Every structure is written in C-alpha cells, then in structure tokens.
Length: 174
Image 1 (tube, rainbow, N blue to C red):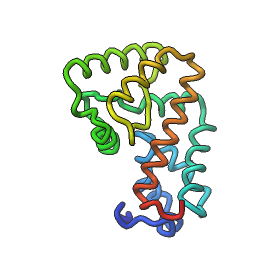
Image 2: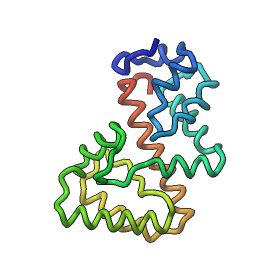
Image 3: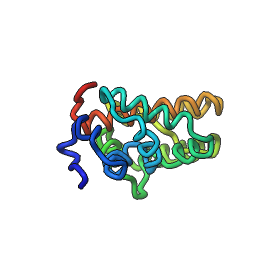
C-alpha cells in the first residue's frame, strides 16, 4: 500500500516499508530512486530537513559514476523533450515554457555549450527565478571551472530536492 502524495506526513514516511518509501520518494532526485533507497536505512527521520540532509548525504557519498548519472539525469532547461512532471512544473513556473523563438535558440545554444564543457546539463533551482535570470545564470556559469560547476550543480540539486520534499510534505517539521 503506497500512501498518496497528498496525504504524506513524516510519521507515515517513518512507518513505510522500503518499497513504499522508494516509490513515494524515489522521484525527488531526478530519475535516481537509488537516493531514496540509500536513505531508507536511516529511518526514523526527526524532520523533513533531517530526511533531506540524509538524502543529500546519500548522493554526496555515492561513487563518482553514480553522481555523474544523477547530474546527467536532469533535463536541459527549456527542452522540447519529455521531462519528468516535477521538472516540467518547475520550468513552467519560471516561464521557460513561454520563451520567444530567439530565447529558445539562445538557451539551446548555451545548454549545448555547457553540456559540451561539463558533460552534464546545466542544473539550476528555477523556483523564484524568471527566464532572464536563468539565461544570465547559464551565461555566467558556462565560464566556470569543472570543479566549480560540479559543486554548484550538486548545490542546485540540493535546493531543487528541498523544494520538492517540502512541497510533498507541505513543509511539515522543517
């Protein structure tokens, strides 16, 4: 029995089976249910923030190839390709579904340059940002060093997943 997302609470999460936990929280980290799988052994969680920190720690201590796969699992921003429902909603909220043709081409070119340089897509927690801020961010970050961007991408994943967990649990116990 999986608990519907609308009725998830920290108490329910703390009483889930491993399968329910992974099914309920496996999508928090883009196409990477292994993060939820790894965090499960730390039940019970004292707060949503505690749950998030354990999930982030699980991601950070993974083998480099697994972290690379997590980074590569994120979609290019403003892509016309199929993205996860969470990514689609986040991008729509930032106005990336309403780009002019010129902005779309610019963002496509910047995404291509960024991915070519860093070997993973540009990752940005877009909540609270508009399309101009997003374009400026990728224009600036494409000029960084690989190590700076590796760290920034993981930090952005932290922000994205914190938002997602808080939304899922209605900011309970944060």
